[in-house]
Length: 96
Image 1: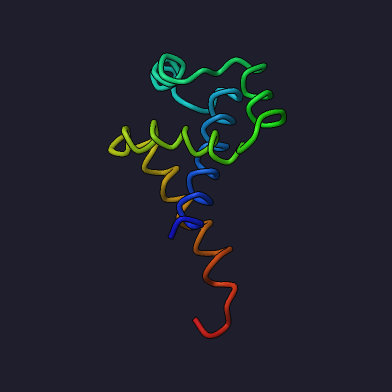
Image 2: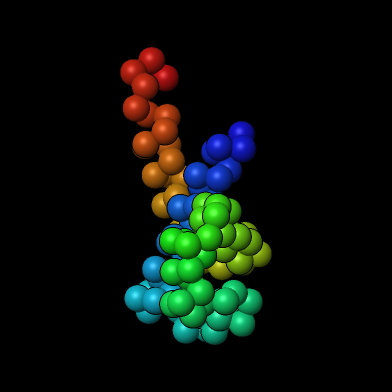
C-alpha cells in the first residue's frame, strides 16, 4: 500500500508543478497553490536534485489536490492519475 501511495502522490506532485509552470492550471487555483506551496524554481530544483527524498517532496504537493478534490479541474487530474496507475501497474499482468 505504501508503494502505491508514493507512486500516485509523486505522479500528482509532478503533474501539479507542471500545470502551474505551464499555465495549465486555472488562475484562481494557481494563486491558491502559490500561497500554500513554495514554488520558486530554485527551491524546486534544490528539493528534486540536491536534497534527499525527492519523492517525499513531490508527494507533499498531493495534499493541495486532495484538499480541492471536489473541484472539476482536480477531479479530472485524479481520474487521469488513477487511469494511468491501472494501465501501468495492473493491466500489464495477463491474468488479472
